[in-house]
Length: 599
Image (cartoon, rainbow, N blue to C red; front, side, top):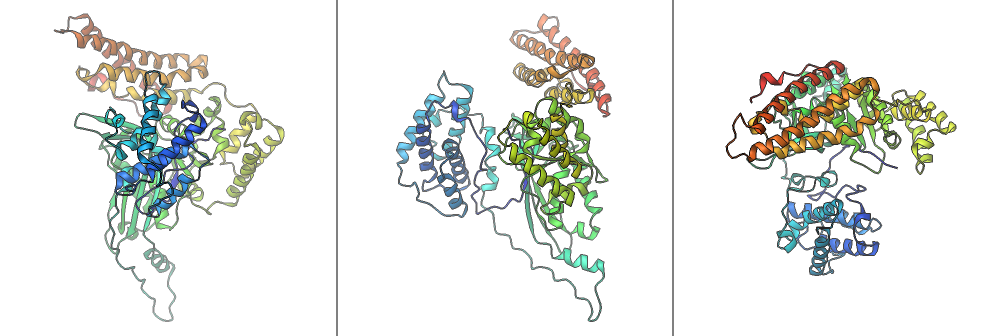
């Protein structure tokens, strides 16, 4: 049964300078390897031999490569305990000779032979992905190996983001001299402290804090002066915080777009001020980190919610649950709203599997999108996770920290855990249709109506799920599907590249095509508008390709004329389509691209 992971929140504790890989995440499919199970076990032993090399913990790059080698070995031979044992040993900062007697030269020869085969002309796409995963750590461990030096890499495989911490986490951490704890002022003998003074004294003793939440986000990364990549991935958001005696300072992640982070900062500050005194807020010394990436405008205000959870954890001396998931946009009154273009985050989190249940807190405004997962036959999401809808920060804080749940939530969780245990090996859609299971789901729903896992599986078991997407959900899906082209109508047409236009067309069609099967007759026109827009981009790409081949292009040229006329048509059609979608979703209308772009 498929298990899905959107957004994990956990306490980020660094064990030495070596961070073990996340266990239980499948990096690749073993069945596509051209090796039988015995050969795969031998290959795992070769990787273990490299992981136990003398310089395995020498510096940050070597430590990270070691973690990658052990993750690969664990994927190849899941029954072996050696990778886990080595991870524990390295995390403690110790060397190990468990497999040190293995011949590294022989191991490298064996790996080279396998890689040559995996990168051959007849290799499948999945086999080549596996080869790239193996080459990433070998580029550090054995850079002079022929097959490594001949590699033309476009960067590290994105599959590592789910398993291996970023490089900066493996860097040496300097010792920080902490000031002595502030002693609370004692009341005069015979006098009892007031409630305000007691609260202040407790706050003065808040311990230094380090916590981490993995957020689904769209991030930018500067590769070179000419290359800027945009990633859609799960990224660790870290908070390191303490209370100063006097004035503190809060550092936020870097945002490439100046419109992005100021409102996020304001929301975090406003909501903290509603819960804590201004004197406390001004003394916070905190550093929120997202790594060496830019937080882009497409994310909207979604970063504020994980930030406020980490901040509340610091000030209330609690760690967020290790299996926590949140998706929503925080407002200034502590309400949890739906984020703009929610499907970009939902699809991102749905595509990142995990093997254990997560507690997922979803804005109550995303109810229609949650029902749409049933329409898309993705009911496993609700079976494999404890999904709750939340309206306010009070809901979030009740469900985000261990032991803070109400009696109703705790009871509903226990009831649903029993349902999951019984149905673990069964097909979800068939299992929840059983009358006895339906009755138990109804009981869990009535115990805590916020538990979407129970209510929506009850809907699925009763066959009451919508067969087609509502107009609102369809508009939201189309908006997300066309996000890759959202900046195209506002671009300078002279700077467009045919290859990038082809990629935009491919990305849009990949997202649009699966939607078609659940579009009602009344909404077919809206869907066709989005589809026509995506197809226009292919026409634009082909016109640009021929335009670029002309030795002396002029405005009278057929291909030049076709390129500009198609670009202008895209501008108009996109504006009409985006305006209609904005009305349906009750969003601000888009700017007219014809008034803001250059030909």
